[in-house]
Length: 145
Ligand SMILES: CC(C)(COP(=O)(O)OP(=O)(O)OC[C@H]1O[C@@H](n2cnc3c(N)ncnc32)[C@H](O)[C@@H]1OP(=O)(O)O)[C@@H](O)C(=O)NCCC(=O)NCCS
Image (tube, rainbow, N blue to C red; front, side, top):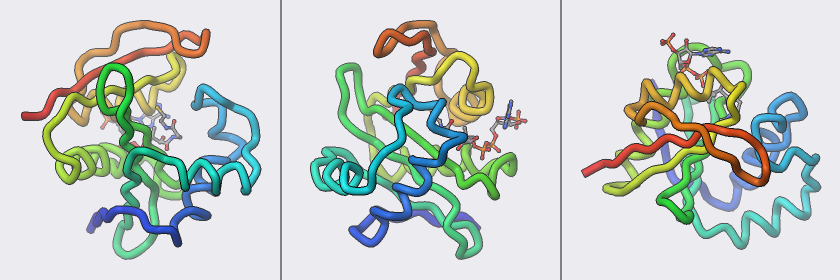
């Protein structure tokens, strides 16, 4: 069973390890390795909400939702050992339901097929191509009412 809760300070390191995983940094717009002290500062200053997911009690990833220019920007990472089981889609559904009504936006690198598929299956519109930080990407949107 999937459960989701808001993050607390004990989750800072957990999210750091997911976000800083070498093989996954390429999916982010800032791909540089992150130092722990930088992450801790970023965590303190973060203006959004992290939702921590557990599957059958095991930590399996996070969804981050933060106000941005076009709406609430959504980021997700599923722990590598839990991918490909539909958890990403379930986590997106649960996080948006927990967060409430709004316009949700995701920026996805054009070669990130897993993410593109997960967001579409979670009810986001067909992506359109844009650029972010000078990098080609998709942007897709879901409005919840
Ligand atoms: C993107 C990510 C969150 C997807 O989570 P997941 O739990 O593995 O995805 P799901 O199992 O829910 O699969 C969602 C859909 O994507 C498809 N999919 C999964 N992995 C895929 C892959 N490597 N290539 C293409 N499609 C893939 C699934 O088949 C599924 O569609 P289907 O049901 O029609 O088959 C996960 O791969 C991840 O954490 N990646 C690294 C971080 C990242 O890229 N974050 C997104 C930044 S925008």
